[in-house]
Picture 1: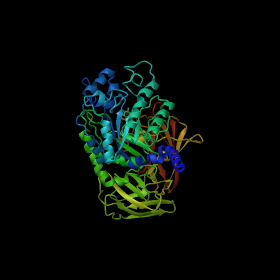
Picture 2 (picture 1 turned 120 degrees about the vertical axis):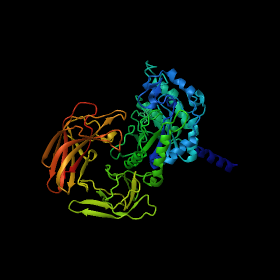
Picture 3 (picture 1 turned 90 degrees about the vertical axis):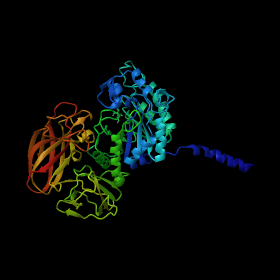
Length: 593
Ligand code: FHN
């Protein structure tokens, strides 16, 4: 009897540890997401019915914002639910489209700003099961199908904006009076998040958006709720309140010009809207999307690419076709995307970019160099070079050149005449150990000296300052100040006369990008001084960031009369007033023939 009692007490003592949740590290939480690199965003809701038109009028802007853009009264908008009957919806097809494209996670709008829940909710009858003739929970169907097909299911949830609720934020046309936002959080947001995190199995991440005035405590309480219900669930970048998310989100469609440390994601559209719009046919090409996918991975980010299903429940044909083409490329080349890390070089190359895995560098080349590719500044020993598309891994000839006088490494790769893929060809380089790159800037093989803002030393008076070059278009953020100057040191081995090209960037929203010029700047180099006004001598579509063009200003000419190490300083003399400031990106010094 004594022995039995002993065993009983041991068992009772073990109970708490049986139920205790295993704590999870941040690296463990982020592991699947870092491996994935590519996901599908789905913006689907009642707004797909008007599809960008209200009472016969085209409403400008993104489709899911129609309620606000057309100031549709709540009661009229809510009536759309009576028509919502997406009978053609098939969860299997949605997941297949994502899977065929090579996407590893799917983030669907469980509730967008219009307040309508695409899932069965006991918190509000304004949901797909209770308020529509369709009467079925599409989120449930998708969650189950994702689990079957090995895709992570993730939910978008608009935590602050809710145009359907008097206490939610941002519907001033129906609810102009004071609101009790805390009440809205307590009575709708938290209970609905609880439903989403308890009724649909393991959730990959919650994608919060547009936090607006949410306070630190309020945002923190949402984070704690997610952590309590599903400790493994990732919290996206836009939770707000200054609370640390699990990863950062760039602006919509914004691809940074440089590597960003840490975990981050670019959410992006396939055309110019998220929610379905009947007349938006401005589809991006599969070619551009594939290049962007690679470029984002090279800078250390994930790409979350959107589809906007129709009211009858189909992903638009054009989207399906484009994604399938991206998928064709992924089938051959996914090794250079999944689980890769950012390039060892801090900046992008004009020919493409680089991703890496231990012992391997993947050169994603979209501008094939039939006369050979030259890479400046790679110190690592190269063991073998081959095409990723070549299953036999036949070696490609290469030559490593070291210039002792300049302490400079140059690698010449003899590429085959024809690119294996006209969209993006991948060359694999097997290297010894961790990649080592030179820190100093060297003249390129074609004679150009490339001086990106991110590699400059920036000073304000005698203090080092940090300019941010990772926002839309890659131009400096908030450079409003004439006291700040940038300096680069670089090596020139082919001296001569050079044209100074100063590149700034457009900024603003993707729908209406803007640019601010007329600043007066000075360039000081090698005892020569040039002064110029920032004007748009040339505008170039930036295939990296798409919406925001690069603006080239001809800054004049300079001479380097002998090989050596030089220094160039850029300083503003007068900055025009305005919101954008000096959106400087980079300087190219190009040899004048
Ligand atoms: O207002 C939303 C918009 O409708 C869409 O959901 C995007 C996706 O990133 N987020 C907000 C704007 O940034």
